[in-house]
Image (cartoon, rainbow, N blue to C red; front, side, top):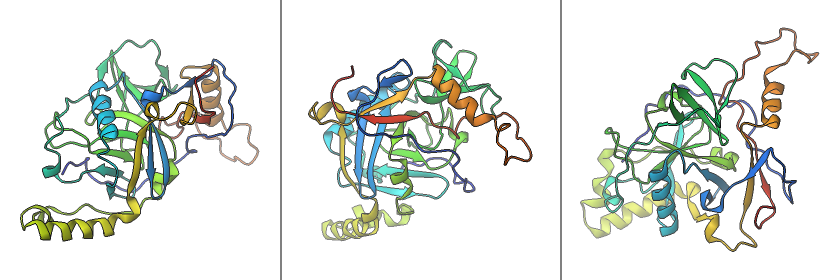
Length: 306
């Protein structure tokens, strides 16, 4: 099975989840429509989760994930590894079940000009420059840029070698910045992060348990998978769809605040300057951690963008 780093101490999530509003939104220069081909909807036992894919940052990962979603491989599978303060990981779980899926090249960073990158405006512990591109938290060093493992990011698990990812994905429940540039981030949750946090905390079956699934005959395997289903029932993926494959009149639609934009800069400033709040006795530094304020997203009426 593929793993994601080392479990560290639990973090407390700061800031709000992705914003959501119903009905028709006003089209303006500060918001952009998420392309249906880049919008994935997971229906889980804890509720729906909407994900925007970062096709420009990790094209091979996005292409294989789209193929996996369209194939139905995730339906009836589970978030089988959910560790407090770390990640929620889903997929087929066992290496023996992944044989038909091609291994992917590491796409954890790329060379891209600074144009279109919105700097955070203060120093970062992990990156020379932190900020956002197209709503995704990103770091930069010279011309190299990478998406960050902030809460709600969509990353792909792999074995120790860098080019061994396939379709086992994970969502950080807290900032896991030591994973930056080491694991490919290829999207982020834009709605329903609360439903990810509501998943039951579970550990995967250890290596000693795997023979019960594969090496002791068909009856033993059926019993083992039935026990697995019972243990993970609270974390089942009931349905996985690309918005592009749903009827246009009823498909979910989202907008994301443009980065850079005047509205985004104003929002960041409001979250880093507490000098005007009477209850604040000691005014903190005007610093805003890149993972503490997700770029807002909002659900809008179905149909094409205006």
